Image (cartoon, rainbow, N blue to C red; front, side, top):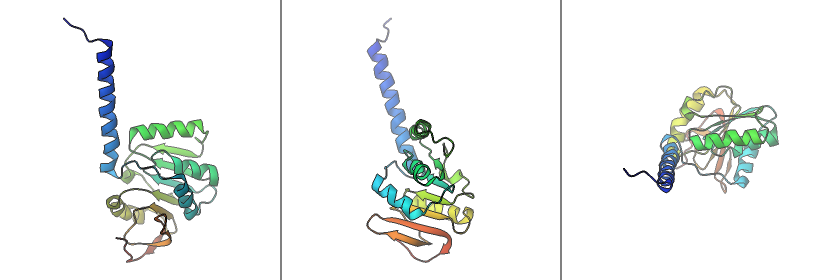
Length: 185
């Protein structure tokens, strides 16, 4: 009877981890958007367009590595919630907010962004796909109170009227309660 050698076990572990990682990274794309980090320069522009005030509640739907929620808490004193479905990024965000000592101001939940209750949000950040924004728009209009702000990176909301647009960076900000027939396409 031949036993597996240590190198066989290591190879098997690497293979299993690789398969799990590949599935984990592809799965969010089917649920909302693939992970594609926003540059820090663009992150700063998005935060500025949101006009965040002290203690406002900020959500980042598909928060990825957590850069927006961390910056919102550290620079503006906001309370922030990141919604992330992908397990590796969720764990990364948990570690990051712990290491930075932001547990009192920032939390990350691991769930589908469509199941998150957004009624208390003052600001919502999105860097999703167009098809996801098309679906998400109805939820935002239904749940967010009038005057809540939405900032979207690259992909837009077809019937919301933007309040500001940065064409060069392809960022739009919106206030809920304002409708338009304006289309980006």
